[in-house]
Length: 217
Image (cartoon, rainbow, N blue to C red; front, side, top):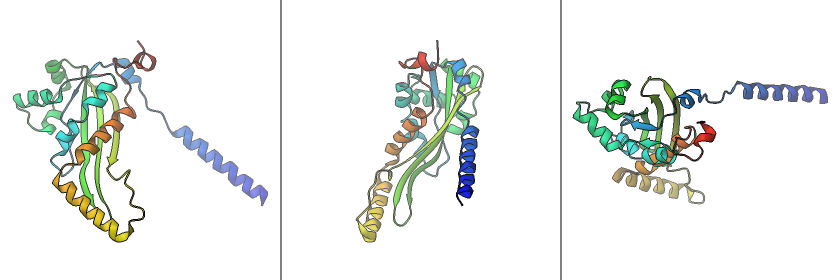
């Protein structure tokens, strides 16, 4: 019996080591070579049914990118420039040539964002506001992909419903749903999503004190 358990333990450890070995770390070679200093953020492509997704998400991305050390072109100016050139929808803007965008703005990189979830969901005993998004950073000069990432946040993450009882939980969910429909709590959740999106994977920009250590001169 002891030998049987020993064999199982050895096989389990081997499986764990194999699994760890198969998990590859993110390849940052492209962004290390490109070393972008400035980023044009295109208005996000909204895949959710909530029309507020594009501009709520767009309003939250500048700060975390700037704090990482990148120069971010004013997002309102970028949006207006596209509109003045006849591109009024995010889908049209995303289909524009990276070389043309670089020519207009003089940026090093272009950030494409997709809002996959945005808004409130009601599930009888809970009412949650969820925002999930994915992003890709492209070298504006070559069109090469420099970085990809995704993130998700919800306003229910820190909610404590313990001790309320089933009736209290139902009433709380209903009240929260009404509040969600009246205002736009998605904006605050989008801020958290943006923070996670960039701080969990994007390397620092040239204005960051950690730039030379992580990127190199």
